[in-house]
Image (cartoon, rainbow, N blue to C red):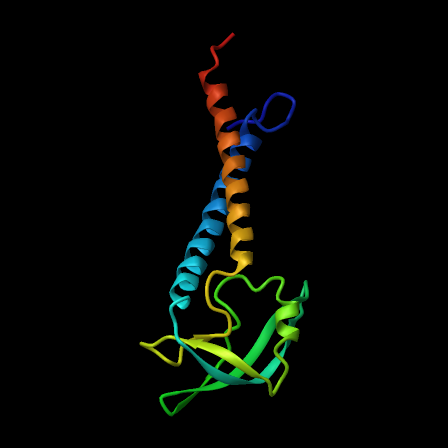
Length: 161
């Protein structure tokens, strides 16, 4: 596409770019939600056992930005075999500061484990509520993409003057 005589991008280019960006972002967020929710649903039926917290802290990663992620480690036994796990929950780990404070080192905690693979475990079973936030974001992005595409469609269907 050629720029208009005034040097600006062609009419509708920004609209197409926004529509594509929103649609792509919505698809990525929906994929995250579907994956997290499917794992969360499976864990709701997992049996549990008692475990002991070995580590419960924040891992700080620095670079251009600083990121904090929960860093947990726990030990548990299933049928006499000992395992160590490091998963707090399946799904996004935002808004877990209170949960992390409730897991002091040395404390006894409930550990949910996969019957088929007892080495796979988590401290939180079921779908966690941050997954719903990601789902809501995906819905908003989908709606925005639909609105942008609708405006593009209306422009194309508009009779030429």
